Image (tube, rainbow, N blue to C red; front, top):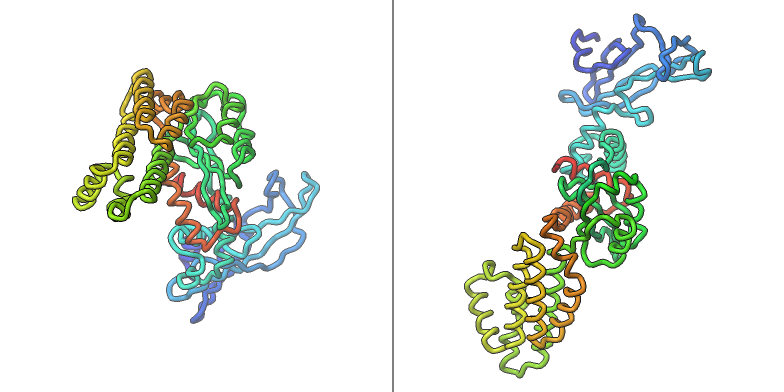
Length: 399
């Protein structure tokens, strides 16, 4: 059976539709080489003489009520006199090694953004393992390479992607949120692998790198980017201070008498929340606690005072304020808070550099939810290279 307009629906360059066979379960579209076209080498364009021809089959997108569409086409082998080699010609719309059209594979890849692979067979006649391969091949072919030119600022952080503390190091463009690098581990080598990709000119354009107070990352940045400033991330610093508050709370609970223990118990999140985020009942319970416990009252007030550092626009004023805050912390005579203040004094220049560059790891922390979602949908990660492609896809789409 011949259909006049099928050529517009199923275009294959260099081929024409010879016939279409329809049944209740599938459609088979038979192609033949367009005899009006000359066989030419796909590499150099030299005219070739046909050596042999073999029939191959590929899957295509479903059409109408038929869940399966087969494309049957001739693969033509010719000898190129210019290259001195045998070359094979097949439709470029069909993947060279997969028995599928690029159209089908890109549709599967699009579905993979929203549907777990083990549920893919319910929507399209493609097994989970095959869908995984299709998605990987499409991402490798279609995703642009990371843009490493003109980088001004970077965000660096680690993320657990496997049980047993299986970490990866992530590097994002601080201005666009584009994922630039993913490498297994959270040691020096994980970040050094990124800088090995950069030329001297690309390194010279980087003005700032935002990290937590991880010594391994800091030493690599000092070595590879001597002209860039390190910015210690606001959210990691507040997290560290939150752990100090929790340490003080646990110590006070252990030392409290029987009647005071119920007042301290269950107050962890009220102490860690900002005042504007407290519920009325939480605010009342916290007020009762702070009235009877001087240490917790001191660390809670100093926690809110500490986050004011990031309201300053000038590094000089931020430096003065931090030095004053350190003096307040030491005056509190709370040992865990004094240890934290000593660390802040050591890192004061890396904290106030925020005023010059206005970058935090907020982008990369929000990106962590994307990492978790992709890992959950994939039911675990078998390949870090594939994880990088999936995360690149999301970051490019969000840019």
